Image (tube, rainbow over all chains, first blue to last red):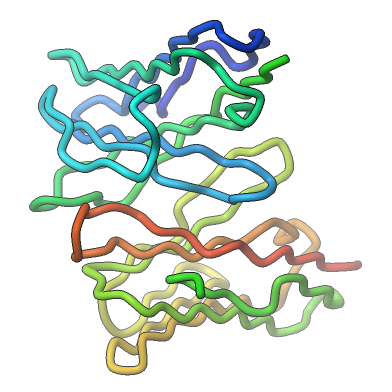
Amino acid sequence: KAGVTQTPRYLIKTRGQQVTLSCSPISGHRSVSWYQQTPGQGLQFLFEYFSETQRNKGNFPGRFSGRQFSNSRSEMNVSTLELGDSALYLCASSTDLAGGPGEQFFGPGTRLTVL
Amino acid sequence: KNEVEQSPQNLTAQEGEFITINCSYSVGISALHWLQQHPGGGIVSLFMLSSGKKKHGRLIATINIQEKHSSLHITASHPRDSAVYICAVSTIQGAQKLVFGQGTRLTINP
C-alpha cells in the first residue's frame, strides 16, 4: 500500500501571501489530520477531517483552514502568511476511531519558509 | 505546565544499553502514542496503546492509566535507534486531538 503523500515538499513564500498544501492519505483511510512543527513550539495539532467534515480543531487562528474531498484527499490553506508560519507541516491519515484520531500514519511533510 | 511531559530531553548511551524514556500526562486520554522522528522530519508511529504493554521487536511500551505515565524501552540499543522519540496523547476533553510532548533526543554511540 502506498504511504501518505504530501505536495509540495518545500515551499518559499513571502509575508502576506497565501499557500495551499495537499495531502493524499493511505487508501482506505478516511481521517486526515494536520500538524505544525516548529523548533519553538514542537508539534501542534491543527485540525482533523473525516468524511469531508472538520471533526476536531486545534488552537490556531482562522487564517489556517482546510478541507477534505470525497476521495479523502485533503488540502490545508494558510492565508496572509506571517514569518511565524514558517514550519514543517505534516499530515497524517488513520482508520476511523469513534470521535477521535486513531494510529497516525504520517506523510513526509511540507517545509514552508515565509520570508 | 505542559499537558504532556517527557524525560529526559536528551539521552546519550552506548550501543547495547537498555534505554528508557518516560512520559507523564495530566489530561484524560483515550490512547497514548509513541512516535519516532529521524533527521529530515519523517515521523513513524511506533505504538498506540490505551492499557498494559505492547512489544515490537526490541521496543516495548507500557502505560499506567492510574498514574498517568508511560514508558518506552529499547533493549540492545543500536546506533540506528538514534532519533527523536515523541510521546503524544489522544485527549478526550474538549476537542479530541493529539497533544505532544517535547520529544526526547536519543543518541546511541557505537
